[in-house]
Image 1: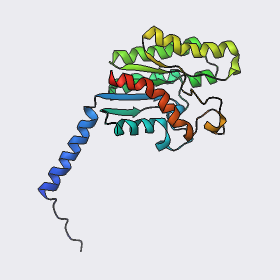
Image 2: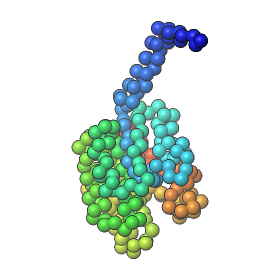
Image 3: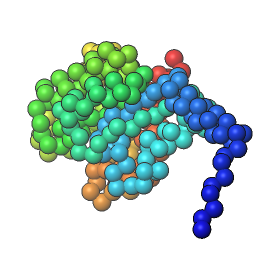
Length: 213
């Protein structure tokens, strides 16, 4: 016959409640709530989650005792249209103070209309501002599959929107290794684990200023 479980001691119950409360407070009252809103480049595609630049960002924030919470709502394959459909609900529920907006690469790789892509990103920036969040726009380059003019105009979308909306900009997410195959998976599109610390440093240069200002 099974023995009845002993009731928890009051001290243990109090300790459990205290730890739970502190954990809850650290999430709710974080000075900054950083939303990473992107595609496969921010969703650890083909690599271990713990090796991704977002995981490395969480580690850095923790190691530097920065009062911030990182929330990753990136989806592999996401386009700017898909992001626009999702973002308002996430802004309402997660209440970020900073939005790292890393979308557009899939639009470009599919040759989607750049005017629509630009409009989608601008609306996401405007929505973020409506919910009192600052935006860090992450720029990208794409291969010249659809011609040099399309490729040039694609990259200009990020630069122009950053200036128009007065948002911070990382001009190119893959800066410093884009031509080095050693930093990519076999598809030569997605960065491998070795590239993730470089991506973090590229984004951190701007994000650090946003956090401390």
